[in-house]
Length: 88
Image 1: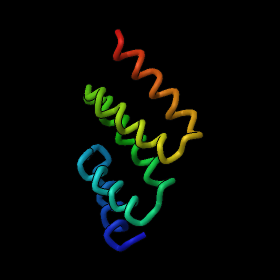
Image 2 (image 1 turned 180 degrees about the vertical axis):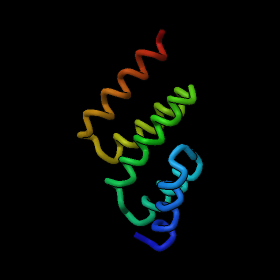
Image 3 (image 1 turned 135 degrees about the vertical axis):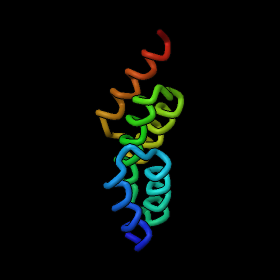
């Protein structure tokens, strides 16, 4: 990864609940074409959004994770649960 991505990864590790920092990390990963890691980070970001009650943002982040890794069944199920929760 780029030097910037390495530094921001350290910051994310120290501040795991910082959504904006994680989003910046994802952008750097995408720039470096690290799609598998970006997908994992999108899933973590989605969980953070969900914990903070931002269902629309959580769904968007899970969808981004799936776009990068369509076979991730854990993300698929999380997305299904969010859609069901949104309907209730």
